[in-house]
Length: 339
Ligand code: SAM
Ligand code: DTB
Ligand code: SF4
Image 1 (cartoon, helix red, strand yellow):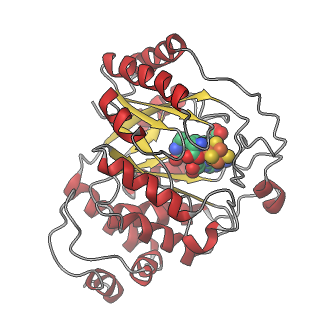
Image 2 (tube, rainbow, N blue to C red; image 1 turned 180 degrees about the vertical axis):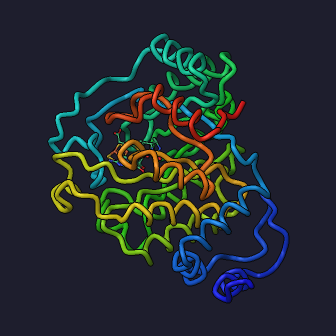
């Protein structure tokens, strides 16, 4: 028999076909998302896996490789970030890479099996001169036959269009957390700034990659509020990175949380499952903190509907699961890299 809370959560969104790219038939209320979070774990994972199979190849995982094209010295104050100039984290600043260096990294990523290449820059937003270099990088990455993604901070008028014209497929810009928790983490830009950049990306015709971070000391209700925000973007993002906070010494969140994870690992799996259920067609990506989750929790995440990972030994400034270890894990689980 169907669990009544599942029915309630389902009904609170008005009925109608789930159509990606068109306005959703209804909005997710925070309460409806919170009801999903509260389901018994097996019911939640079963439901997520069912949604997953209706929309995706069951055992395929997409591989994205990340490279930091400009590192450290960022003027923003995101409380989780090792690249903010004002925190003393030991990250070495690195000016914008040359196109040649980026092409070499992209070629290596492609040869290792990645299909998407994501370029990250520690900027509040790109200056015009820097954007011109990034446009060259985008063209070069596309010429290698890869999907191109960039995360450069806030975009101004015309910048999203320029990126789109250069061939950029995805722009990553995260909402990071619930609106009501946001002010405890970031003070140099607000939630509406983020929504405005996402709007520009959408209007320029690019795919949106937008997710958040869990494990920052937020409550479950705030995790539900983050997922509701993402799912109510119209349309919801094509790509949803779910990051587990990597606590880096020198950041305010490390000082606050003391290096200990603030999150039960099953709660991370629940977040993935709820993202899958509320954004059925999106790629849900296991992002930062994946290595620290361990293989068993990662396996649960794949069952709960995660179907993308960051692949390669580094994220931006911190380590990622080794590519060799990932290949071995995929073999043990019978997963394949999505072609
Ligand atoms: N500077 C640009 C911006 O903030 O939009 C782009 C790069 S920024 C590093 C991209 C995202 O990485 C952040 O929005 C955040 O979600 C994630 N991130 C950064 N540091 C993290 C950490 N220590 N743990 C988990 N995720 C992190
Ligand atoms: C995203 O959501 N996570 C990635 C990517 N988008 C740019 C970044 C994770 C960064 C983790 C901390 C670091 O390595 O500096
Ligand atoms: Fe800068 Fe981005 Fe880090 Fe915030 S998350 S401090 S904007 S690099």
